[in-house]
Each structure stands twice: as C-alpha cells, then as structure tokens.
Image (cartoon, rainbow, N blue to C red; front, side, top):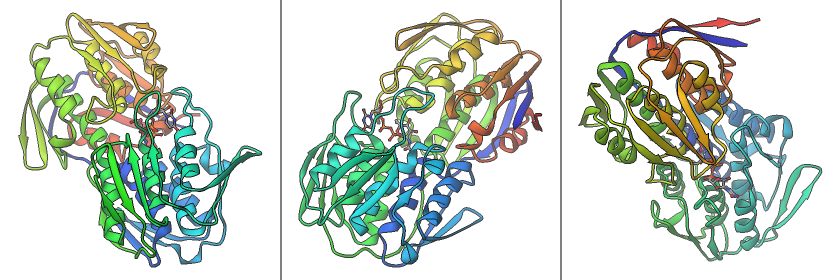
Length: 421
Ligand code: UD1
C-alpha cells in the first residue's frame, strides 16, 4: 500500500490544471451502454474509479480502451447483464449501469452497493424510480435483479430524506431516454455532472429538457447513436486546489476551473477573507491574509458540496475563531475529524455538525486516510503542518484525484509517495 510523506510549510505558487470530472465521466461511461455504435469520451481522469467502471463494462462484454484521457467504448458485444460484487464493492457509482442496462436490454443484475465508510447509502430512490417506469425488482443473494418487458414513461417524484439524489437522477434519466412516452422527474438533482450526462444523452439522440433544474422532462426515443464528448472539469478537484491556495498559496492559478460551478465555495471563501480573481476557465487565489471564521452547511447543488466538507474543515482548523460546518447530505461523514485532531486541530463533533476552534499551527503526524475526500483534507493539513506528516492508505485518494502528488510538487509542495510494507 502506498503512503504520502509531506513536509509542511512550503508556499504553493504557479499553475495547476484540473482534470475532467470523475462524477461526470462515470455515469457517461455507463450511458454508452445505450448507444448503437461506439462512443468516445474525452477528458477522462486517469484514476482508479474510472478503471473500475471500465472493468465493469468489459465484464459485461463491452469493448473498452483508454489512452491519454480518452476512453472508447463499443457496447456491441454486451452479452452479460451482471455487475458483480467484486467490482461494485470497490465503487458505489457502479450502480450507474443499472439504468442504461434496463433501458437497452430490459434486464440487469447489479450487486447491491450497501453502506460505506461515510455512512448508510441507500438506493431506495433508484429502485422507486425504476419501478415506476415499469421495472420488476427483487433483491436476491445481495443482488438487485431488475427486469422490464417494456419501460413506460411516468411522473416520478425523486426527492428523499436528504433532498435530491445525483445517481438516482442519472439512473432514471438513462432508463427513461428509451422508455415509451414521457417521463417527468420531479426533485431531480441539479448538479453540473447530471447536466453533463444529460448533454451526452441529447447528443446521442435523446429528447430531454429541464437539465439543471429540479424538473426534467424526457420523451423516449427508439435509438441512440454513439457520439464523442468531452467531460466538464472536476469542480471538487478545483475546489480542493482553491482551498490549498487559501491555506498556503501565493498566486496559485487553478486552470480548467469553472467559477459558475463553485459559487457556494467561492462565496464562503470571499466572506472569510480569501482573495481571488476569476478568469476565463481559471481561478487565481491571490492572497491568503487574515481569515474570518465561517458557518457552512452542505446541501445539494448549488449549495456547498459535501465532497468539499472535509477540505473546508482543514481551512477552518487554522482560521482564528470558531467555525461551524454542518453536514446535511451524509450526517456521519466525519472520518477526518479524529485524524485532524491528532495533528493538533481542535474540532468537536456535535451530531451532524463540527465546531472548529482555530489554532495557530497544525503539527505533522502519522495519519490514516479513510475515504476519498477525508484523504484530501489530510493532504491539505500536511501541507501546512509543522514537520512531517505520513498519510497511510492513499489508495483512497487515488480513487478520485489524478496524480495529486505531481500536481502539488509542481506548485512547490514537498510531498512524495512511498510504498508501505
Ligand atoms: C454522488 C457523488 C458523490 C457525492 C454525492 C452527493 C457520484 C459518482 N458520486 O453520489 O461524490 O458525495 O453525489 O453530492 O456522482 N439517498 C437516499 N436514497 C437513494 C439515494 C440517495 O436516501 O436512493 C441519499 C444519500 O444517502 C445521501 C443523499 O441522498 O444522503 C444524496 O446522495 P446521492 O446524491 O444519491 O449520492 P450519490 O449519487 O451516490
């Protein structure tokens, strides 16, 4: 297993280029199952979750090749409708193959993803929406077994206890594009990645309106063709580098970053005293002077993203005063807290909130990565801590960040990867 060794205290300066969005590329790869000819997807990050999705598509019979950020998928040979436990357990987003397999073949067997380290992650909304399109669903031996003679458009309310669901919206959209008649998804997710998937489907020939709003209307079509598409930039990676700039940057230019996808983060940072310039497809953190504490609540888009909660917490750790961060999407997503406290942070958890009392410095320590975004928060903490931080189990970060240590090194960070025994 790999680990990162970071010697903190370096100032970060220069340019970093954000990769394509993992959360767009994954459902778009799954959507290519629906095509009658090969698809070419560009700007795909070279990360572990993408390889897992490629393995799932290959395991059902698609021909998949990946080179230099371009993934080619030919779905013609698909002859198996099972996404196996061994692959699904590595990545919950594997469930995104359920909708397109049903849309194309009327059947799918996908391992039930269960919970994960950031808390319970039910799939009831996926199953509800697909049932309302006319799918018969059984859970057997840990698998979601879904079958439909013919999918039929329906009015589907897709809101849950925590608001909209990104992948449930994606799944219903991918099943409905070939269903008979019209589907209306109410309380649809508005995330830019859902819009990107929708745009991909529209290029393929789907009839969808309302993308980016909570009401998506789909008129089913008979056939969808293979197309070429470039995925949008990864707003979570961009946000992570912007927070790095706020922590220890000096004119840090984040390229391939879309400010319109990052409004909630930029608004909080501006209010807490971080200065930045917004350019065409880039954001430059110009000054990281005295910061003010903030009160952040995670919410579905366009609210503050849960996927930046842990990284924002690191910034709060060294912001004078008391900051509060409340998690409304995954109320148990606080695995980073005890590790940050080991580095000298003063974070107190209270139900689904953390109260962060700013300290002057963090102090390097051996810490353990627990999930993708928690790992990112520890890397950020390592960059500002006094002395050496060793982060174990960085395979978590490899799931979602392309080459993060090279990108940070080029900015001036002292970070290296080692093999741990
Ligand atoms: C996606 C993102 C993930 C991000 C999350 C929330 C991908 C590949 N992953 O995950 O990085 O953290 O959105 O922005 O795009 N829920 C239900 N029932 C369901 C489905 C979800 O109750 O059937 C709940 C979840 O437990 C959670 C909330 O709804 O509390 C939002 O989850 P959801 O948007 O579905 O997350 P994912 O799509 O899995």
